[in-house]
Image (cartoon, one colour):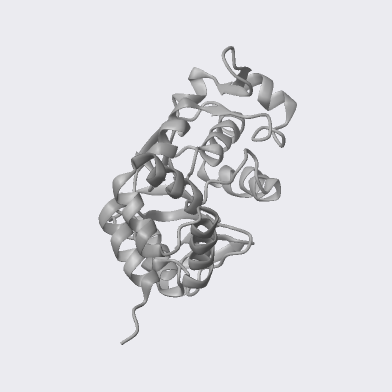
Length: 259
């Protein structure tokens, strides 16, 4: 029987790093991993796994490569405009408003939400929870530091109100007031049971890398975790496969409400 070295590698990586690649689309992930390994001039996935077991910096570098941590503040601004004008007014007077940024990476989405809600609901209490599988990237999110490239789509008025130029490195630091709305924690969307009671959930550009079965399971878990009347926003290339079956209705493009 032929040995599937990619499957063996995925099993080993789960043991070494707790990352389960079996729920990711194989073609995309395998191509990314084999390209990375070939650039390292390692002949086989088996040998590369051995190096990951023995070399923590190598493991961290590899995890950075396969984890999708590409973002910026106000990414896809048309979606934030729909949130600001159509969705957030329907959430006014909920105290406190509970918001979840799922797969938050280094926090660009979560900080954008904090800016938008501070502007739109200035007298309303809100709490934003950002979750990600990668504890290293969450430490960066907690810092609230963003490069000039991260900030390029932020309106200048918002940038000057909620961020300051870093005194020690290039880029910007989020204000203490803005950071006060945010909490970050490790969570695996594929394995953990989600906290309940969310009024607004953003899960964008995450499940596009998952198999259909894993994607549907994540959406089912999110729908279960939402309050009735709560909203879910997915990425502009994503969809919920069976919204009615999950108790959701489509209200705006890529936005669902729990009935």
